[in-house]
Length: 241
Image 1: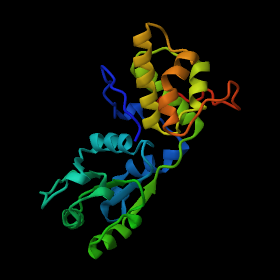
Image 2 (image 1 turned 120 degrees about the vertical axis):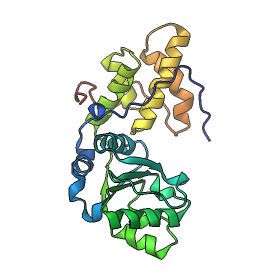
Image 3 (image 1 turned 180 degrees about the vertical axis):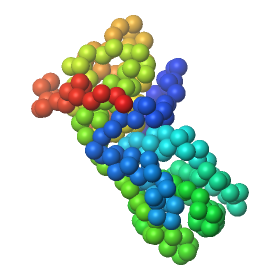
Image 4 (image 1 turned 90 degrees about the horizontal axis):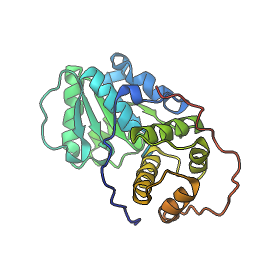
């Protein structure tokens, strides 16, 4: 287990639709989320690995359409109707399968929109109730794929901008060549760099980044043994939308 660094003044995550970065990896998901009226059975499952932006896209859609937000791990008992629709985050980790089955049946009966979020397609969730497994297999599913270089560039620039940090493109490119390719890791790296820069009273440079992130990256099995990596993605490729 990697040691977590205590960071002061955390920056609240933004789930504003204006902060969504359009990319080929999330194009299908964005298209489906924009048109809940066409979902088969009024139900959709959004899946993909951690850190790819599932929650951001779902939060933006929930705000737009007024959907109720539910936590799958905390889902219990019989829920009342939600005419505008519901979202179940971490639905693949649900503890009370009967509660999820009831919610699916309720939404189907009332034609209420239901969005389920998980890391794998719902047909692969470790479900024991046969009726629930059957309904999950019948659910339209859409995935978020691996992020492109352009999306990662845009995300890194956004995370620095959220903290009002100005970082040279060359330093951002150096980081992108080494950091794990997901939004959560980029955000944590930026938080660590912000903390390190505050502690040293200077700006974020490549030497500072190497020093501040070395131990953390080693936890991922990433070692900086090259000063001249191959092709680096350019941080100027993607505008923020």
